[in-house]
Image (tube, rainbow, N blue to C red; front, side, top):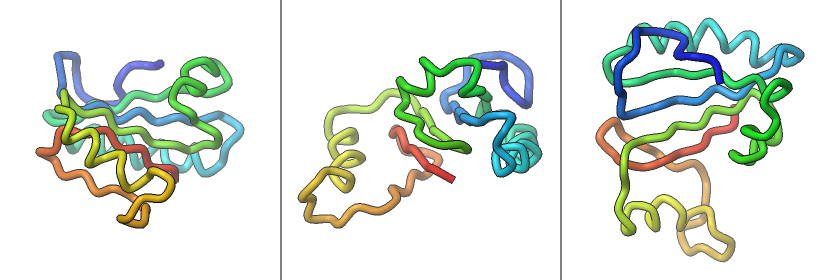
Length: 114
């Protein structure tokens, strides 16, 4: 994983991992957008880039099947928060699935495939 695309070190609570590949046009186009986001939100968010061709084991660990993929990792969560996050994505769920919205103060992990 390469370092953050913006801001300087320090412990940050939220980490946005950008899975990409040099061969992917859409991923290359997202680079500048994420660099802007990293600069704008440098006090609340760290953005890291993972090249899936160079680190396939990390991509596999996060179940990345295509690029670009964004994975938002946020601080600790309790059991109820994890269940609330996972429930819409489980087969046979009453809530119907779809993307999960995560606010800036939520302590959850969300995956978004671009």
